[in-house]
Image 1 (cartoon, one colour):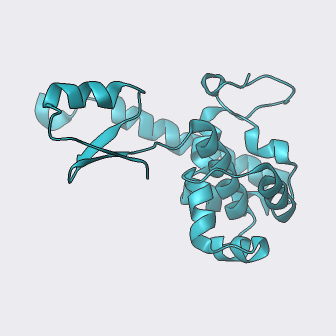
Image 2 (cartoon, one colour):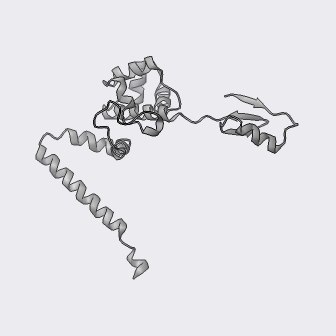
Image 3 (tube, helix red, strand yellow):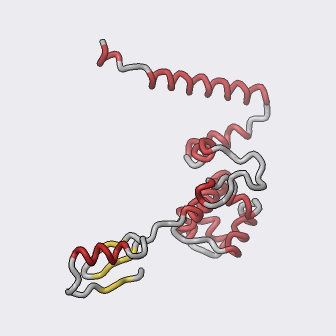
Length: 180
């Protein structure tokens, strides 16, 4: 962590100005400023895609780490976006997870600097990404794709849609105890 020593001649106003000078958040700790870095949103997105793909394949962080010659903690840091994944490492990860490197950048919000339409077809919607980032969503997806009968899959979709609609209706109804 980068540290800047604070001399005793600096007052609170000067400290505030110093902390705002480059836009990085800083914390005062025992006479030093510690620069606290936030993960880059692109690194977070790429890491999230690594996590989703790993979970879809049923792999643990430990198995992926072993294949890469890393600890599971390093894989965990990649998935959180805390540590940036270099190009050669991303290539290795793409081979292990059986996807092209471009997979990790798909669906990136336009605000992160990449045009969401780009060359990608059928970019997944935000709610699909959010669902796949939950354990329940991944389990549901894994089980669903194993069902071979198209009619059964269609009936499951209808059932889940009906449950969701009923839940939406219940959520929008006023609380009867308060109004009655």
